[in-house]
Length: 335
Image (cartoon, rainbow, N blue to C red; front, side, top):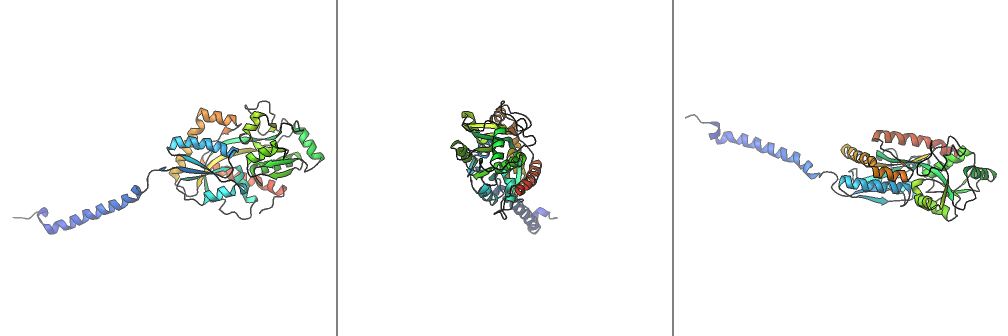
């Protein structure tokens, strides 16, 4: 009787060996996928390089709440203020690119190359911009009892006595610092700079009489504006904003051409997987389209952002170049 293959033990051995090899290969290929749970599987940290209470903190807290709901994991705000935002940036830059650490990037980041001869992280290659949450025009504000009733009066006083009028900012080289230097250049005046550890402290400096004025976003001084303790003299932008319809633009107040806006975005650590970046961008877009988010931003004099990663990266490059001449004319020396 002719033997069949199935009846031959010797013939079965190669087949069984082949099946075993295929099974082992399949298991080895499956292990990495099984070892990596779907993102996010745990809370996400959003490093804010400024103290609590300022515009960067306020807007990122609200965006963090929106992302928490959308992603199903808590987005925890980690305030790491100091050294013009470099403490927070350095903390974030050295984390794993796994999507569990994000960085709250604002326009102050674009000034860092002109402040430090050497940064503790790679300025150009540490982060991947994801999206802009909001744009907010800056305004010039003084205390309620300030003798400067309008922008023209303040500029006239500064021309009579250079460096007598003081201004506070959230730190040396911060966006408000550069914005005020741009204001000095546009108005042909010289003011005296007093740096604080954050935007909130700069506002307190005006309220306490330690400094005469601030150049700041509405979000960083919302409470003091609402109470009337901070009196705005002029705001950047092409037109007045709905939140303060009686507040003139700088152009209307006699200084055309001066326009500086704050921007607030979120970046990932360089090397973060593209699907994670795309997911965060998508959820930020959805958050910015929500009516309650639009109302919240409008109350701060801000408008929704929503830039895609490539456009955000281009904005950062342009802003970095923009501040070069201001740093030079302002006599900024790298530390």
